[in-house]
Image (cartoon, rainbow, N blue to C red; front, top):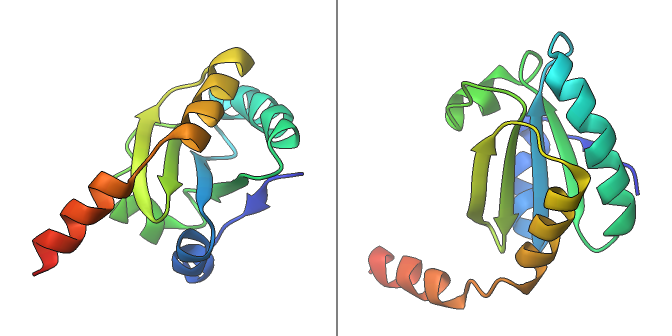
Length: 120
């Protein structure tokens, strides 16, 4: 399944309506981003249960600023609306596949409970 181009207007609904979302922050001029994009697309094909999205930081500066993206490529992983991974840099296919499996297996119920308690 090819990755989805994500805009700031779609961001919140995508995160809230899907259990697991990977987001690749990138730019057209970034050579490492282009290299990582190939790996990202390959892994996206292997994990159809995960939403793989891409944010062009030049076209979506509001999102890049909100998440304080300073280095690209930058990968963020949201599970049930909670950020469970955020790091800059490229990675090999094997590492991204391992991260995808860990994200699928991750239990965020304790984090969710703590967030709910903090709201009270």
